Length: 106
Image 1: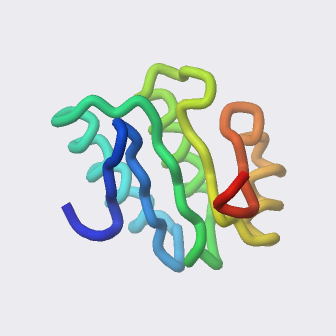
Image 2: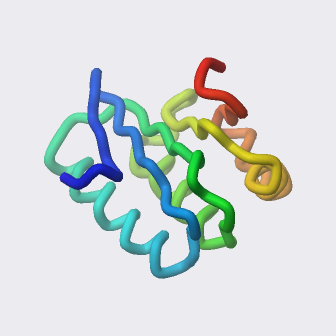
């Protein structure tokens, strides 16, 4: 497992790339699905600390992982979200299924 994925306390933390476009979203989805098949994961934290661009495929990737976790409340989170990504997440309506934290401490 590379540095993009870290597991601790059954929580998978995914450090997202600078651009979360279709090719990156697809590759990340496949890697997360492999991890979910191999290990028990009760939650996923998406770290947007380095991300400056995200398109609709990024939203689809997040929703797909939410469904893969059984659509449990509080099963996914977004941390270190900048203003641009925050607007995209809010406009998409994904805030209804995931907690969005502007800072790590939230």
